[in-house]
Length: 269
Image: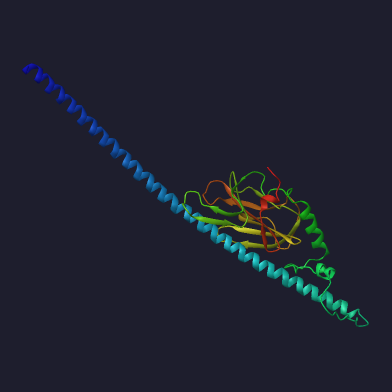
């Protein structure tokens, strides 16, 4: 009986020793996992800082682009207004008799209401009207501003990946290319109405009648102010992407001052 008890005690001691060893191993594993978790948390915090920095840089760039667009539209409106006044003054000099203006009484007829047009923010001449029509006819068939690339941020509101509950708004589309310095091309025939310095990059603004396309985040520009460009002509080169991986272009398309989804106008890939 004594021998049996001694044997049992020895077995219990061994089991206790194994349990202690297992506990020690588990503690070591937990400590290792805790260290890895802390490392991952620190990495995520670092990534969040980088993502916020990238987001703020994009927001600032978008704001600069919108301010530049507003200034361009005002300038175009002013220039067209001056040209229109000169034309009217010229026509007045050719009029020998003052036309009689009919007096309208009562409410306008249905045909008169329909004939009224909403005032455009860009005064168009005959060439602009023709170009606008051609641009409209090519909806869904316009060439992409870069030969290769993918849309990283689509048009409209978007959630920033890696940042919970952080939203952004894209006035156009953000296209990422394999590397910086790739050719950026005009989406359609038009005129260079502005070249804007964004600080860390440049932007080119093209006018196609009542349509406008913008090419932002450029590392360099290859056109000049007032130059007439053709479809596919190089206007500049892509700059570095916000996350420093590949190249990038911010592409916008507007009807006068109204933002459009560029993907509805570009060829399907």
